[in-house]
Length: 209
Image (cartoon, rainbow, N blue to C red; front, side, top):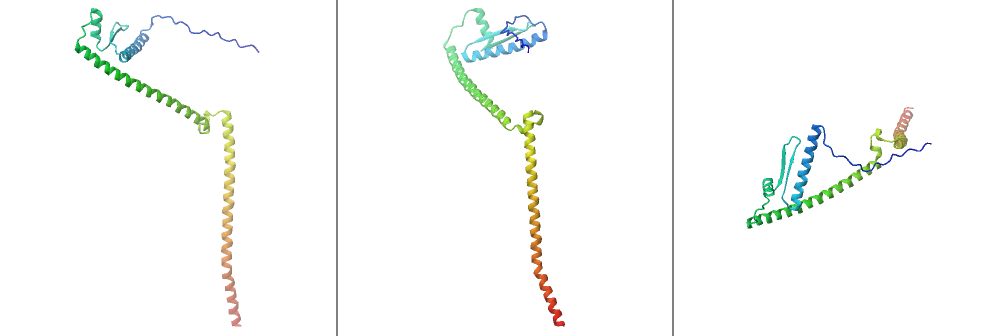
């Protein structure tokens, strides 16, 4: 027998970065990447308590922006290179905002923990369900059973048929015995009455003679 030629493992290949030629594919890819980028920026701003601004351009040169807290103020501050003086009101606003961000981070951590617990619970339930299906394989559709399960099912049905026939025969015999005993009891009950009738008729004949 000829040895099977093993395919050489190519490993992780480098994907060349080229522009997508089809416009429809390009637009769909841009929409997905833009949504993912804005989502990551929002998570970063919430978790770290930073101000962030992003501007992206679509293949049709349409601008899309995201900013936390306000994209215009962030852009103006970036372009002017002159940060506004930090007054007492601004410090109070920042402190309040940081407190809110800290509270939101705690809630987010708690929700993520609950989500992880529910995910593990769902996986455990799936495993239990699969194990239950394996144990109760006879409840599956016949088309999904293998040759081994079909043979076991056939033997089980034959055994069930045998037991049903034995039980039916037993019930039939018991019902016949019950009917026989009822007939005998009825005959025994009526026999004394018949003998007395015969005796009385004989005496009647004797007196007549």
